[in-house]
Length: 157
Length: 81
Image (cartoon, rainbow over all chains, first blue to last red; front, side):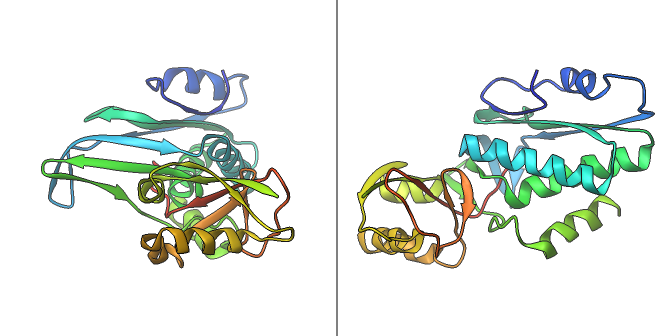
């Protein structure tokens, strides 16, 4: 299995945990699952549709994992993002981070999700009772060092 | 030369397609293609300051020069995760 993927298939965390846990040097595995919530900004959400610029999204995920490895050397990471229609409670992203110690595992895992929201070309189309809207978050700029440092700061908070 | 233009999310909705083909003069830049799109689809103008752009699936600046056959993408603010 590839540690990085953008896929319409249902996400599973366990294979990612096994992937990053290969070998015996790690003492901690931190994981994150992003889940579709039934409400947003007082809207009753019925479902989401995720769209990606797939080859670029996978490159951006690889870049983020590379950045995390620079910050927390020796960390092993895997991240899969789902696209297509997702119902309430379904996982939109799964991340696993293994490291020798828990601080780096937690930090790298948090860093990945913070950076995904900054620079990965994926978009959320929210369908709610009474309408639909494209969610527009961050202007993606991988060279924005202030944004990257903010992700590091959040990861270590 | 001829380039492929990829549009996503709201930009795709505005254009009615996420996959366009456009003629451009030699030496045209990403910004030239964007300005052509805004002329064609004025509703895109409000994205002027918030889009990112890419050439052949790598981030690129508006000043980047294009070559025949390039794939230019315009990315509204992202919302993955």
